[in-house]
Length: 532
Image (tube, rainbow, N blue to C red; front, side, top):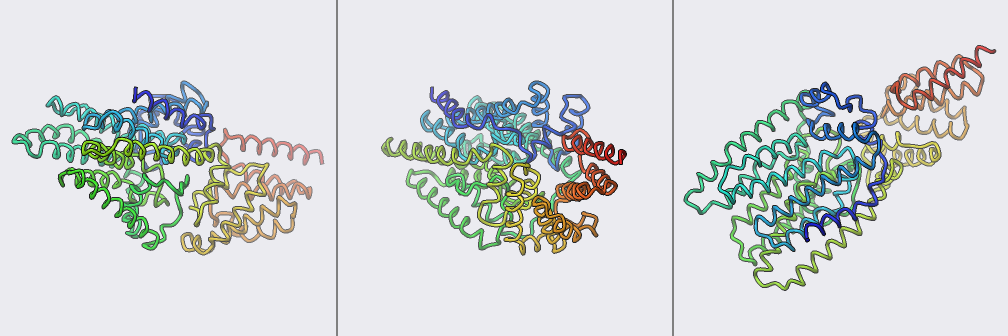
């Protein structure tokens, strides 16, 4: 019954978001416009041997291929598939906690808190993050299988296979081998046959290591990663990820732009140290030995290693969805601490009250945040409204997500945002691209207001560079060409209009709506020009 209640409450929590649409942010690249999304042997082979957007994640891509083949482009079914995998992860997480000694109420209470923790919204409702939910379900199934094998005194081969598959779902599963070693050592450290027991792990760990090595080799084909030089980022994240499990405030769907150095990292470091010390003090109060205390701290720290930012693959420094596995480690430690407190005589109502209070906090925070994932406008508008300089990814995708009905308002917001954080963007990208992007924004706003002279004056500033010395060329260039083509059309300079529309056409995929609309416009202008 407790497991069924957890699954039902988790479904109710995510129910409002299951009708949301695909997002421009990666959903188009992974599902909607992915030329390799067809369920064919060639595509299956390709994903098995090649990275996709600099990561080796074949299993989620196979899963998306299957959804596309069965359900077409119905986003509701993709959302349900994500949710079912998330439910499987919650179920195995609860079962794993039962195996290591937590009573039903504690184990399934922790599983519910993990399942509805607000950072999970990004993993479950963003279809492209099939990686998280598939990896998580495999990781928790692996750890559960390991505890069963330990109880039966058998080598955990199934756990090794599941861990290897988790590695091929997302590289965040890398620390699971270390978690198994720590777990075995804690369990058998005092037994005379401990080395024999530890040797049971050898085969499964070698299997997992082979899967990890293959994943690293394939990924390195396109991006071996660049070492991070600002150590404030990984050190700050080491404490930031566990801290935000318990205090999921300031949720941001698109990576925050800048770390801010040590000044920005210190509050997270301080908060994380305080939480760790409180955990140690509470564990000692509950008469824990030092070994399990250190083990849980090592597991929490270990699960953060793949997401610390030690290697820069893109422009992020922190991301809410990367807490998928870290949050499980934190809540597992909290669950076992609560179990120990109950065994030491703490009143059940206190433990229950803390759990229920946190569940209500998570539920309220999550439901306030969830609507921003409804569509592109709300998602990127929210990202730009957060305090601090928005990551350039947010600016880029917001530019692409703009819809005709609110185009002027959106471009005004973009212009104000770039102007407000101009110096920081220049520091990152250089002066010329930022100046030209500002000119593009001002020029398009002038076009929207039918100020042809103003539009052309701004566009001349980037025309000399051919529209290529500008941030987000693939987003800005077709708008640039379209505006100049429409101005030429209004001034009845049909030859110039055709030249610009044909240039615009080169930026679109041949099967896209934009391509068809522009091609139809070119045909219409050619007919008018021929009549004259």
